[in-house]
Image 1: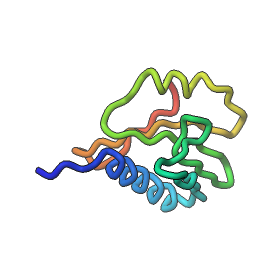
Image 2 (image 1 turned 30 degrees about the vertical axis):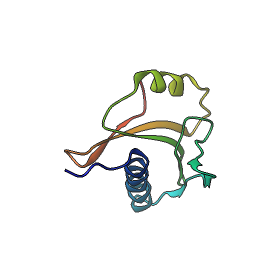
Image 3 (image 1 turned 90 degrees about the vertical axis):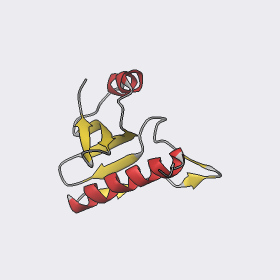
Length: 102
């Protein structure tokens, strides 16, 4: 079985999330790559998704949930109509599990 570089795997999963949000009629933005690594939004989030009703700040992860990071995310102050979400991709099921609360 061929091993995939962690960066490539992460980018692939972020791209899946990006495309899924676009299909759901969100305007999606991902910060550009700076030098040799990508920037996180506020040090936590990978994507920003916007529609007429809400703004989502999304952290995308592969396979396993990282409770310490999620606790930090959900401790952040949250304005009205802004949702923080953690999307964890399950490669066996080929879908995301979405956490919006802890």
